[in-house]
Length: 392
Image 1 (cartoon, rainbow, N blue to C red):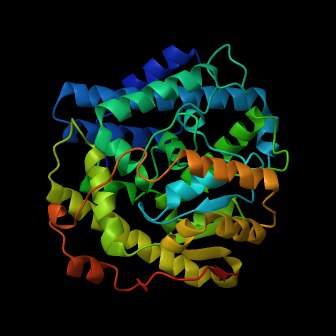
Image 2 (image 1 turned 180 degrees about the horizontal axis):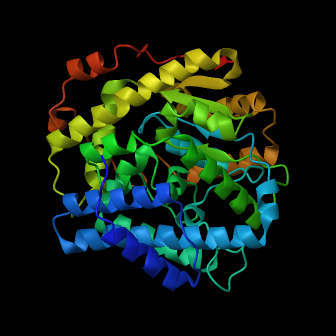
């Protein structure tokens, strides 16, 4: 699928150059992916307000790309930063992945991807790289807009400006990750297009962004990154290509529950401007996740004992998180300190279940049945583990 109109992409790039004051050219493969994004954004957004929202997001991403490239040219030592060994939380939404990431990120001995860093990885002009400044103010405004304007999305995935969030947000800057359909353009044809693109470039680019963020924060200083996103489940080999000593943590929950939850989050994310029906959302959910889980299973078989991955039942993990986090740390070659445990327990106390709202969802709303989900994921062992398992 090629030959997209280039007008929107060219305009957006010109505006980003004018805003940033940086006149750099983007690679052809990136420009093609940007044109595709605008094509599907135009096609799937029925009103100008909705398109303007997506356009503003693209502008923010493009400006950050330019500022990052400019900093990299002036500070090539950024690429010397070591990001080889993160702890990476993978797995479906509603399987405890967000809470696990945020608990471990509360430990000051770990490197945290706070929401304000994800929305604008490049410092604002005139601000010190290590200080939140205007980036935190911007993130607080975004989080407040989601909380007040889209409570369903906030309940599904709370946005908290100064708390950890998914590194999938960094992949937005590539416009090439298959998970880019989450950006507000949940379109089956867009998904098909994204699957034609090579998968490694997005992970190479994000590894450099992590180096950039680490450099801004005074360098590694012994800290491992805590990364998390469901989209990584189909990208084990891509992750390991750029983070060769990664430790993966895979909380598991039954697919009937997590597919319904994913549909709920995807439906909430498209409000109020998009018009895809719940049934269409259900179809997109299966079209996305079934091939990704096939990739996951196949990569595990190829990697064998080169893959360090811990599987855990999400209920067991949430019932005794400190015990499991201590185990995750040990497998990653570090120890949970008393200071870290205290910080994690404080985060838990400050963030009780239901703090940001209660999610309600069902397969039926998306015209899916338990039998359809069971059949779709029948090639996997869908029974969650009851004990933490390590595959090394």
